[in-house]
Amino acid sequence: MFYDQAKIYVKAGDGGDGCVAFRREKYIPHGGPAGGDGGKGGDVMLVVDPHLNTLHHFSRRRHFRAERGEHGRGKNQTGANGPDKTVPVPPGTVVRDADAGGLLADLTETDQRFIAARGGRGGRGNSRFASSTNQAPRMAERGAPGEERWLELELKLLADVGLVGLPNAGKSTLLSVLSAARPKIADYPFTTLEPNLGVAVLDDFTSIVLADIPGLIEGASQGAGLGHEFLRHVERTRLLIHLLDGAGEDPLEAFDTINSELAAFDERLATKPQIVAINKMDLPDAQTLWPLLREELTRRGHEVMPISGLARQGTRELLYRAAQLLSELPPPDTTPPVAVPVLRPELEEDHFTIKREGEGWRVRGARIERTARMTRWDLDEAVDRFQRTLEQTGITRALEEAGVQVGDTVFIDDVELEWGE
Image 1 (cartoon, helix red, strand yellow):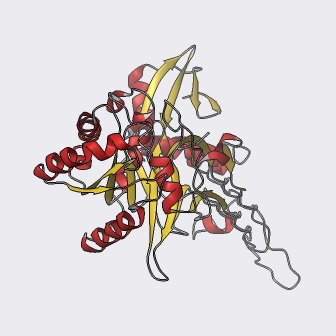
Image 2 (spheres, helix red, strand yellow):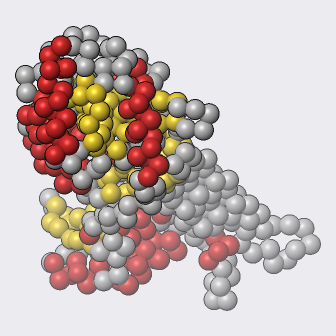
Image 3 (cartoon, rainbow, N blue to C red):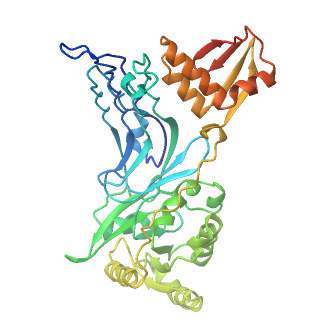
């Protein structure tokens, strides 16, 4: 099975905890705080691997986690950063946020990298909190949590030329003749079940990547057959070879059907340059229809060429004509599309919500939840600092206005607090 869609979970490493330590050395009467910072958590990065051409490896593994940073140590020693986790993807992979649906990245270039989840920063040690009024702070931070989310991956094959046509028009046979690809070929009354890529070599300096785009039948743009699944692969191609069965019942109707489905899926597909190849010209029926087909399609402004994939007639001429047209077309646009911002209010830094939950109150917000996870609840100074954060962000006032009472439980992330005076 050809895998061109996948859903994966990525979790970056948490930052290492900061350290509470004091310098105690002989002949140094005022050592002071010496707790080091924690290391940064590892990132999860998607990296383009040119040796991959499907998303099949994600059918066996869907969860990817990076390691956390090391904790800080005494003598102001900073913990080591957690190693990054690299996840290989094939060229042409489009990355979207699974929850919000926003476009995050379009990965097309070899070794191109995208940070799918950023590691949390390391917590600060107590030496970072020293001041003129607090020269011996007994507080430190836990490491910040790493980002985590579900991603949707979609593969759009990167090819110069796309072979389109109704099932049994001979696309797979033509691909096998023009390139070293070996798709399954037989007199099937149905379509190929997966796209096939092939590289056609014309000379030492010229090669063309061809893609057999299967699944196109009437209604494909609305999901009939497999066309809706594979029409996305046509978007990347610069030129189309529209293959018609010259011995079929009505080649012109087949031609109109495919072009209608291309336009219905994306209007830009209908404007792509095409070479119309009349296949199976080794058969008498095709030879009889050839003058009519050539006249009608030429009248419509299309370039028409007779070929026989099975007999290998005219295939080389078709390939050279495709190469000539490609050289005349504008170079492919390698500028990645602008990523659509993932608009999720709950991820905005200072946004927070308060809701009644059972016998208590649930506070949600990116900043306050991260602060709660980074607070050392076993250190009084750290707890006091968290209380000041509640006041500075307006959460204290918002809870009071919502009706919080002394003794109520307030939930922030995984922390349970008892509300007091």
